[in-house]
Image (tube, rainbow, N blue to C red; front, side, top):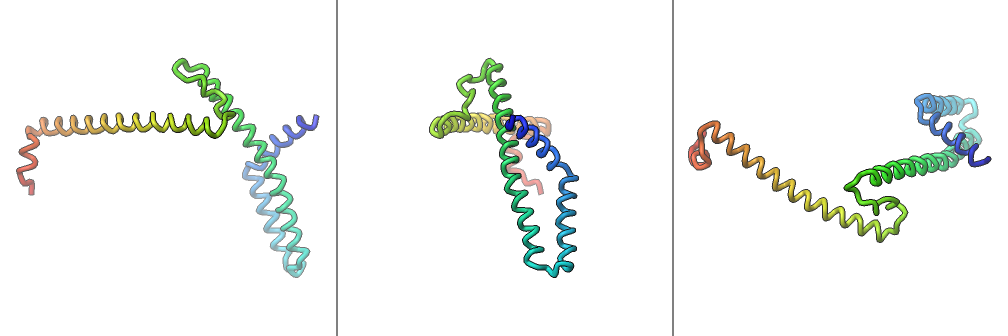
Length: 155
């Protein structure tokens, strides 16, 4: 019962505090507090009010934000797991990767870094080849050869 209440309260608070109205309300409280400073002669109690209020709100919001992040992360992981499972070429051993040890994660990351490096090398070679082709096409369109362009002064 408490879990259901906390879930509903956390979701409601998460939605409300993320809206512009919540910011305006918080700003209004700070402005009201600042304006009342002269009335209370900027006393220690006056300062304690804002310090205590912001500390309590911050303390409670940490738990609500962590709850929201945990829920969102879990939902994203489940969606990614479903995509991995449904994609024929994907490696199903990556499902629940987030539950594995740091060493396992490091090994998988290292493997992907090697794949990325190979891909980058292939991509770089492909880009160089395409640039060379385009340069040659440009020379042909102008009726030039590489020797003519490198030996003849253009200026």
